[in-house]
Image (cartoon, rainbow, N blue to C red; front, side, top):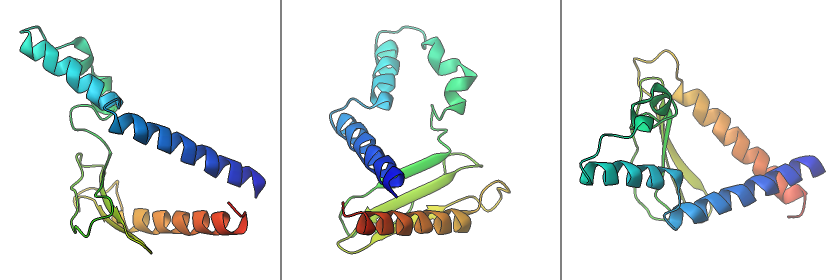
Length: 137
């Protein structure tokens, strides 16, 4: 339990740091967008990074396998569509006593299973809750 607790706290710290950086405009996607837009504004050729096949495979250019959106603590309902055929849309909001999630996948994809992702994600949240309440965080 102690090792899992340490891993969970480490993940919380990492998440909070990345979230803080993103809120300050320091997320990697913002830097890449800036590079792309500056090249366009200056009339320069598109930087090679954006034409490399690995850029697209890593999610660049709107190709993220997991497309997620947090609407925060509002009562907004909705969902996001997957960006790629073999991907998922993951839309969630945080309420006082629950987390509401909507997961989408293309029916034509044999590589995805939105129901299985939902069940696995829900199980993971229950495990985290159990760990947090039994380890006296």
